[in-house]
Structure formats: C-alpha cells, structure tokens
Image (cartoon, rainbow over all chains, first blue to last red; front, side, top):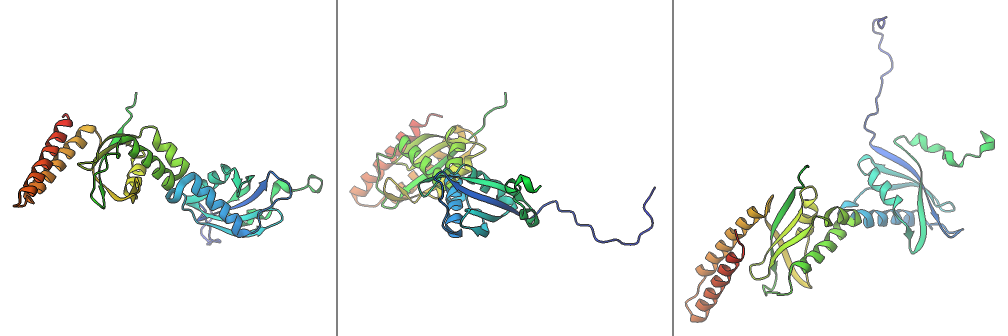
Length: 128
Length: 151
C-alpha cells in the first residue's frame, strides 16, 4: 500500500513555468515562389507586426530566430514565456510584409525544444 | 448593473515658448492623444482606450486640460500624455496635476491650481505700471476661469 522505505530515486523535476517557448513558424506569401530573404528580414517582419499591433511600448518582446530556412521561409523562434501570446497574436494579424500579402503560419509552439523536431503537418501520410 | 468607472486626468500643457495657442481645443487634443496612444500601444491599445476617452476641458490660457478615460486603461492615456514632446508643431510638456475618479475632484484640483498660480502672478507683480496691469489682467482671467468651472 504505502511506498517502501526510502532509497532515494532519481530526482523528479516538475516543469510548471517554462522560461521560453519555442515556435516553428512559416511565412507564406500569396504570390507563389516568393520567400523571405533572410533571418534578418524574417525577424524584421515579426518586429513590425508587434509594433503595428501593440505599439512601441506594448510591442517590446525579445524574439530570437534560432534557425532559418530561406527556401521555405520557415523559422525556429524562441520567445520568453511572458511574450509568447503577444508575439503569436501579432503574427496572426499581420497581413502583409513589405507590401506583399502574406500570412504567418504558426506550425508548432512548445516549451520544449525537443518538440520542434517534427513539424507534424508536413509528415507525408504514406510514411506513417 | 456593474458601474462603468472612469478616471479623470487633470494635466498641465505647457509650451516651451510660453505663448498661448487658441487652436489648442478639445478636438485637437483628442486627435493628438489618439495618435500618441496608437504610436505607444498600437492598434490594440488604441482600440482599448478610444471608446471611453473624451477630452472634457482644455484651456490654453491656464494651460489646464481634463481628459476622461476608463479606469482599466487610463494608464495608456497617461503615458501618451507624458511622452508628448510636441503639440501642433510646438515643443511642449504635459504633466499630470491630478488623476481623480470623478470630475468634481479634478475641478477642485483645477481651482487650487489656478489659485496658486494667481498668487504667484500677483507676487511677481513688478513696480512698473505695465507689469501691474499685466498682473491684474492675468488675475481677472483666472477669476473668469474659476467661474467657468461650476462647482
């Protein structure tokens, strides 16, 4: 019934307040075969989105682009816990970048970097 | 029904060159505040603030203005006032004198402010006749303003 007397096991960690959230985000344009040139452009698009929706004071969030694939316009972002909702909302409502109609597709958000290893929407069904 | 609460911000709008701008009226301040809140807090902040926001009173001569905002988001408006450096293309500074829950407390604070400034004006009354008449005129304007704020 009760637990056997203590041999101390491995330490148990409980994650209640993850410090960062990681997000796999794709910027898809209405025109085909258009992509965002570099990580700098991608981050600039996010910062503009934040500034438009939340302003110069309200939109101050530290966003790090950890990885960037220019062909896909897909980036791996890192945001502090306090800013993830702000960034996500700003990206959702951003309609155009540098005059070109586009949409941010947030594929995956997780507090664990390991969860970013699989963009599950792109898994081909035959391989499952 | 739960009451909708407001905050009334009594602020002093002082221009660097100390001249009076009669075009500084309620709608000019309102337009300025809207663009200032949009700059600081974006579309989201502007939408939160703009519904209950009203500029109730602006007096360019006594430099006082009263802005009404909702109790939940009055700080956005306050920050927009604080970060103002130019109004109608003139360098200025806006400092809050009183933030009150009702118009009455702001009006009382305005009366106190005006009385204090009238005292200062009369205290610096110079010996020449021109300065004396100027001080007298300023005092009369203050009196007219105090009457205009009906308590």
